[in-house]
Image 1: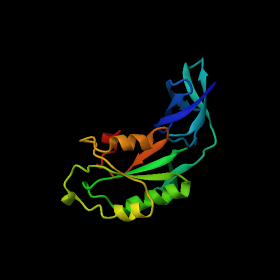
Image 2: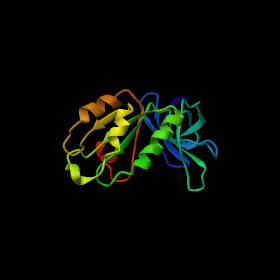
Image 3: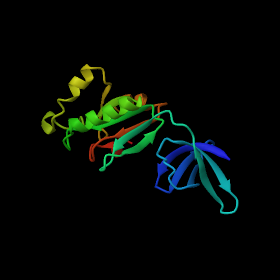
Image 4: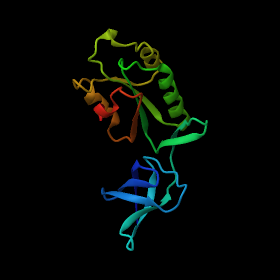
Length: 178
């Protein structure tokens, strides 16, 4: 028996980072077990099937949710320290999407950070005028370029030691930043 943190979720299977640092593919002990990245779990090794099984999800500190197409709440990640919302001039960032992430983080009690990526693009590349009012009300903003490396030290410092989720529209550079 061991504990760990879910780092990948594929429906009926997950990958758990065990307490000793080993990544273990796991099956779920029962249907309907709602697991997302960040969940702390208890796992057991089955000698018969030579496989790890998640037997229990431990209590969550928080959970970031969104509404699905039917208006039901869908869990995205759990036990977060902060949500990094990534925006960029290209593709055009939708301020409404940023507002939804900010509202979701606030509702869940999760600190938010705005990450403005692709600052190496010319100013006329896209409208990011919504960023300054957010900065003015106290939202931390980090300006970075995954391509040139600008601002990455500050971003790394803000992420260090915190369980963070980077979220944002397709194409804003989340994977490049990772």
